[in-house]
Image 1 (cartoon, helix red, strand yellow):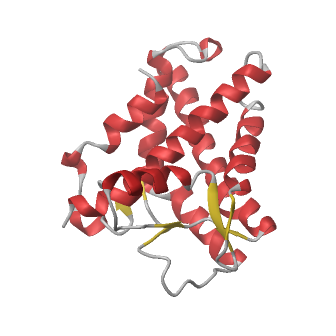
Image 2 (spheres, rainbow, N blue to C red; image 1 turned 180 degrees about the vertical axis):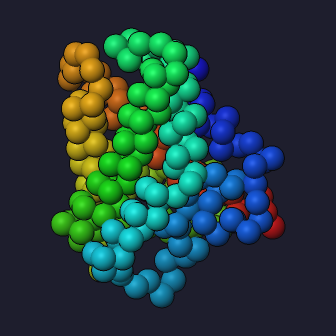
Length: 207
């Protein structure tokens, strides 16, 4: 099972939904602190607010749940044989996965957006055809808004995830070939794109 498929299975499980968490988490699990209902009356946020968003996402209980689930997936697929087997290996897989999520959150939501004056939030379209909204949500991986509200290339997403993949080489054992790092980057971008789709459409399911 690939990481993307595993994520989809978790995110689409409605039994874990809690109404009181609908504004903070998608289906009760996925941290959802940086989704904004609309671009209308756009107001930029400060660097400190960007770091607060990253902190809320990184330290949310859902992030720890996802890390545990991806840790289990990594162990089942023997993604990093050097971690070994058994409970100790699972702890290594889960710890590494948690580091992946946290570093990625800070890089893409706080550090690069602050340096590049880009807005890390996801602004829902919430209208139009389903296909146009799907294209918009996936496209936000490539396009974002500057602090002035204008559309820009999403450098923060690309460099942030690339940096997170590079940092991960320090705590994942084994060889770190360029092709392997590019594969990890592609997976992370795909996961983020899937998360955007959920941010766009999940509120419709609770109406």
